[in-house]
Image 1 (cartoon, rainbow, N blue to C red):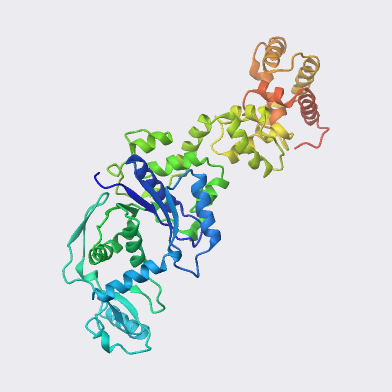
Image 2 (image 1 turned 90 degrees about the vertical axis):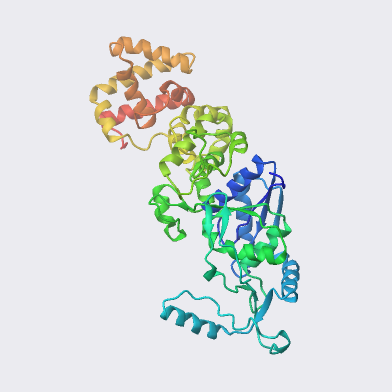
Length: 483
């Protein structure tokens, strides 16, 4: 590429950062990194009624969490009014824009008439040839772009290919409203030109805006950037993601909000990987390091079909990252999720060891915290099916014999416990370790599926292990209020 690559992510701070929006940010970020370019953050906050500082901070926080670092910005459109005004005056002075005095009522009447006649409404250019010197004083007006009579019949898109332009839709669109505020399409062109954006990578819901923007670039004498319109992000049923269906999505294991994935216990690097692969491919490879993505990402391998969110695939990707993660780092991340369950834990060596045992079994940090519960609290209940199988009357004596052995066991470590259990299995269950271990596992955890039993008992310590064995024995004998 000859010109320096400069791309931008331009969210509106009117709510939480949409998962489709962050996917757009990721594609822009990776494209810039691949080509040694510049990634710019621009906050499009011209909607003063809906834009909030809280939403802006939430956007910035989400980008920080995902480690999407911008090279320039954030720039705020609300602080660039003078630039827009200067461009507007220039277009008026050059006759490339004009004042329109048509009232909202007049325009609505013409729109209804077009609907009644089953034709697409476009502004009929009533004020286009009005002499500016005859403009009525004191009347409110909008400023419209004077669309040239000749326009290209298509534009090239780096993802979608050849996109035709319908000249019938190229009307004299509004650059500035009657209150003087600039419109979206006008601001975008001025900003992208001023920031020397080389590639506009955005959702394909902006395809219809592109012809208007191209014509404005030309009118202003600016270089038209290259466009790449990404397919949108859809829900599991294949329909476009909708904020109105958020509760339904959460039941399915996804969300429209980036922040919600953080609360659901997903790792940022896993979500980054998943969203990159949602529409982009590099052979059959699924899991990438950040360095690999920055070196490999290109627009040539972005598909044209919508990216459909798959909760099972996302959970699998997250599990791969959990298994690759450092145990001490996982312990640090797990602490707040344990706190939500009423468990105060330090991110120490003990918790690191627990994470090392649980990470092959968990898909999210929320799941890991739930699995870790029995390391800190006795099981509130025993799995009913498992209890019927392993807590038969004769198991009480078995647990009592195990307790007697463990009272005097030294050292009370993984290795020491395993050696003792194998010796007891030879004595009590004809060498069948499972017949001995499963009742004890159920006593320790409330279930028969867990990491190493010997690790669990070593972490619990002698006193807690013996207390749980006694509690289970009482349950079997029917003299305890344990469910």
